Image 1 (cartoon, rainbow, N blue to C red):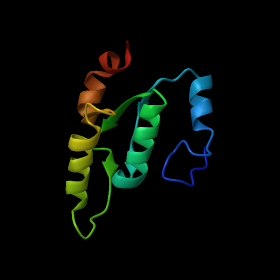
Image 2: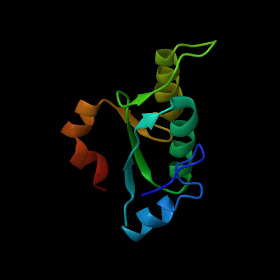
Image 3: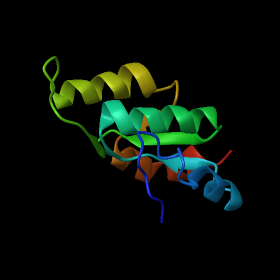
Length: 104
């Protein structure tokens, strides 16, 4: 179990060491809050050399005073992460192509 207290799932959690010990190189990143925790964790994982897939239908966030949660998700998934830091796909696409996504 990992006790996460920061935006990054890697900061002071032991997650990186655990993944390295288990020789895990591919991550599927899901959760809350797109513009904070998911964004930071995605970029840190990328910097550590992990291959990342984000199911676009398995992340979420709240509306803010500028954009709706839906707009924030679309902005991050399509303009920030996809084909740069991660592959962003639907859960169905991931299930259909899991072998191709994660095998060298």
